[in-house]
Length: 373
Image (cartoon, rainbow, N blue to C red; front, side, top):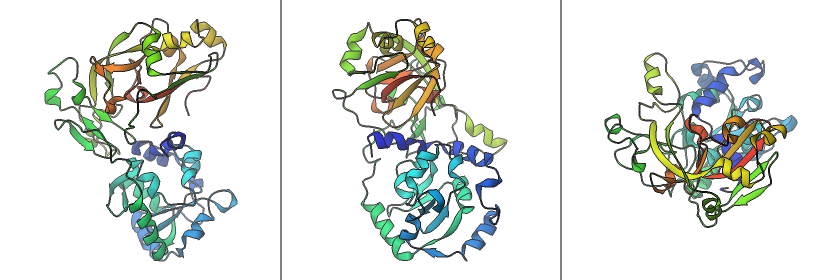
């Protein structure tokens, strides 16, 4: 699961804010006309009269004319009319079609308020409200017990996470979101790595630098793979001082006006460090892009970055291909190897862009016409 399948499934882990935004955009086609959207109280009242299904019944609804059903705990949901609006894309959510959501949400916990030792999962409030609209029945008690046993037997993907500095203010332990306390923010112009804010969507990968490979491919470029040692020997090491900020920084203040979803960040989802590495332009030149104009003529308008955790984003080609630009493939932070929490062994830094564009655990660079899905 932690290979290519892990990366392809990562859209399931999009932030809860994105899920809520997608929910707000859904039109009346999301549920059958015979099943109007109801209040939470009405949903609860109606749920007591719903039928009971076996796991085999649910498994028959894995797409096509049969629709898409999923299970969570003792409940069964028909999400057929939601999947096209899933912010992670239909292909991601279809991985759970006809199955239980627990194995996915145990890994991608943005949807989860808390997870019990018995494998049970409690969804976040706004996710729970959305689910109530789609419940069509209950899972047979015998099948609920079987599912719980499977959940307990599964390996915990968060068992081997890095230790964090006790001074960090933790907003979410799994996956970790933690901010730099305001009282420490001005102690140093360069934020010490242990105090740099943490924002994860998935478990932190435990990668081996010796076996690490970065793939560079796409329009107008040779398909190449680089080891970390090859990148380090490719050109003179460049250094860039970068301030990175999470897009949710100070989100908590919005709650004074209107309740938001997601972590209630204060002012500490921002940090500054000096990163060392190789300029992206030097790597692309080695892979065959001698001039940015050549890439543009080949149709390149965006450059995609993907990490081993499944995060995939893109930035405009004008920013990424600039020969005098500051986009950096970094292996060093404040003169030391990158910590695991911050992208070891390689990450990309795109100064001037929001934190999510600074992909950690970088494994792929792709030149493309379209932006990242």
